[in-house]
Figure 1 (cartoon, rainbow, N blue to C red):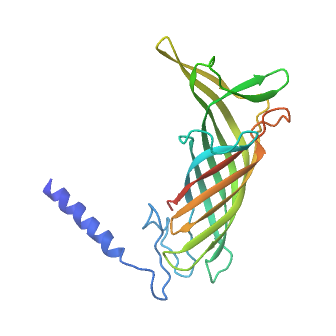
Figure 2 (cartoon, one colour):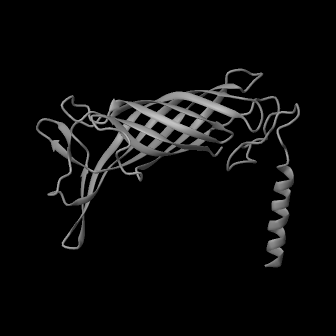
Figure 3 (cartoon, rainbow, N blue to C red):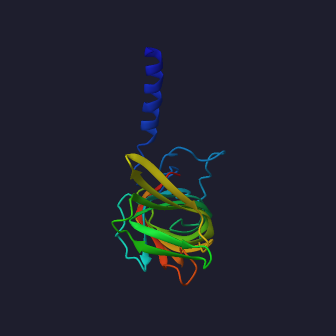
Length: 248
C-alpha cells in the first residue's frame, strides 16, 4: 500500500512540475486546456504548428422556447446536453487567433412544462392547452435527440489564458421527440408516453454563440425551425442558454 502511494505521489509531482508554464514569453505553449491537458495526439506536437483548442465541447443548457408560448415560464429543471466533436482549423499558419470549426454534434433536450399537448393525427397538428383542475398530471416533459453538423468561426486572443468568441450554426436531423406525463392516481405513479408527432420538424437549423475564457464559456442558441411544422400547430422555436466546457 505504501509503495503504491509513493508511486502515485511521484507521478502527481511530475505532472505538477510540468504544469508551471504561465503562458509568458515568446515560446508557443504546447499545453491543451481541459481534461486532456497533456495529450498531444498519437505523435508529439510539431512546434511550428499553431495550437488547436475547443475540439471536444460539452454545453450544459437550460432549454426553453419562444413563440406562441413565452420564454422562461417552464421549470428550471429543463436541462439538456450538447456534445460536439470538432476540428479546429487555424485560418493562418502564423497565428491561431482566428480559426474555423466544423464537426459533428449530438443534442439532448429536455423541457419541463405545465401544458397539455393535444395531437390531431387526422389534421397533423399539435397544439398546447393550459392545464386545468381536471388534468391530474404533475409533470409534463418534451424531450428529444438530434444529430447535426456544427460550423463556426472562432476568435481568440494569444496565450494560454486566452479570451474567446465563437459564432456559428448547426444543421441536422431530429432523430426523435418524446412527450411524457407523470401523474398519481389512487396513490400510484402513472406515466403516459408518446413517441413522435405527426408534424414534428425533422430538419433542424440554428445559430449559436459562445463567449468566455480558456476552456469555459457562456452559450446561447436559437433554432430557426419550429418544433412543430404545421402552421395550424402551436408555433414554438427552441432556445438554449448555458455553460460550455472544452475538454480537449
